[in-house]
Every structure is written in structure tokens, then in C-alpha cells.
Image (cartoon, rainbow, N blue to C red; front, side):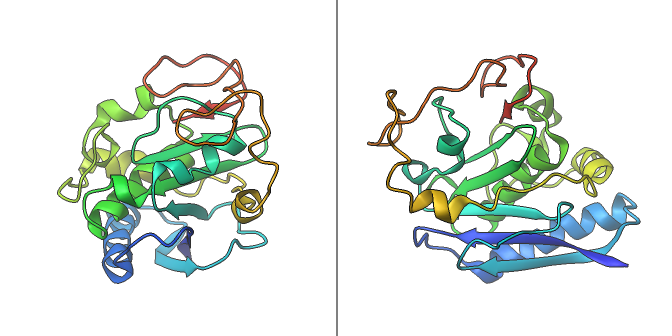
Length: 216
């Protein structure tokens, strides 16, 4: 039986307590596997990467950890110009991608891990904020280092843990692309330009609009 793998790409030198993040992620994801009776996996592996992988298996997770919201990569790639909180996830017909901003999390250990789990729920389930946040716990709108994993979180994540979504591995190339800000619109959180979100996006804080693209 395989292990469930979470790939973490640390970019922009965020201050992180990697052992505590690893321990918390294993705790919550192993709880999903065991208490949620996920038969596809035995336990959880957390892999820290200093560079973007060429590819990851589409049942795995790839999460970018950045120092702050001004470093956001996913929002630029998916052409989203709305507000950002402590994390961001977006998807289209081809790829899904999640990122977490360490400076917006409570502490640099369990708080970051809890936010990674939250964004992983968006990633795996393709749930918008309106669809996920009412569940509370680690699915809630606000997540801190003290937020507990609830049985409702476990049951919901267990249903989609083995879902297959191709993960966007182009974060490093995008970060180093000198043309990535060459847009006529200006993204409110960065000095370089970003195009506005396409029609059909599920915008943070708003209602879901039918279409091929989603953000949460």
C-alpha cells in the first residue's frame, strides 16, 4: 500500500520550523487516512524541496510556501487580482495549484501546517470558499495554530484524498520569468502587473460562478 505524499516547495526564504510543520501535517493527514478509512494509503510522507520538481504524481499534493502575499505566484499565473489571505488555491481544466504565505500564518510551525491542510482541502476537493468554509475546524475561513481538526474535516477530506489533479510545477520558472508582470492591469498586492481574473472564476468572498476556472 502506498503512502500519501505532500511535496512542499519553500521559496523566498520564509522562516519556518520545518520539523513542527512536518509533524503536524503527518498528524492531521494520518488522522484522515486512519479515521476516515482511506484504503488507498497507509500513512503520510512530507517531502521538502528547494526547487520545483519536474513532475509529481497526480494523486499527490504540491504546495508552495512563500514568505508573504506579495510573493504570490499562483494568483499571477491564474490571473487573479482579488484579495489574498494566508493561502491561495486555484485550478483550471489542466492544473491545480496551492500556496501558503508564512507571514500571514500564526507562528512558523503548526499554524503554517494547518494552513497547508486548509489549502489542500481546496486543492483536492476543488471546493470554493463558500462550499468549504462553513464546515469549520481546519476548513474554516480563519485558521490558526490552535485550530483543531474535526471529524467533519476528516470525513470530507477522506472522500477526496485520492482524487487526481495535475499539480502546477511551474512555480519556480514563473518566479524567475522577467515577463510575468507584463500585463496592462496591476495586481493590488505586487508592484508588477497582473491580469484580472477571467469570467467564470469562483472569487474569494464571493459566490461561485459556473465556469472552467476556480480560485479559493
